[in-house]
Length: 85
Image (tube, rainbow, N blue to C red):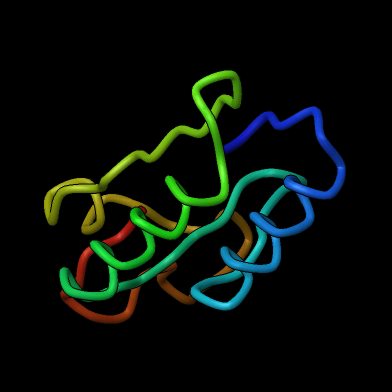
């Protein structure tokens, strides 16, 4: 989840996050990622943003993932055991 006032910077962050996962809301993405790719993504986000930007990462535990679902859908949101945020 992010709140970035600079259009150019926000567009770069959106493009980066879109390359890793899919958008579920304007500034919210669901991403299934390995630990190695996670580290790379976080570094890329740090390179693109500054302290004045609001970027939040929520990591879901396996217990939370098992209890997560998409309303009005029979499919689970998460289909494997990698790291999610």
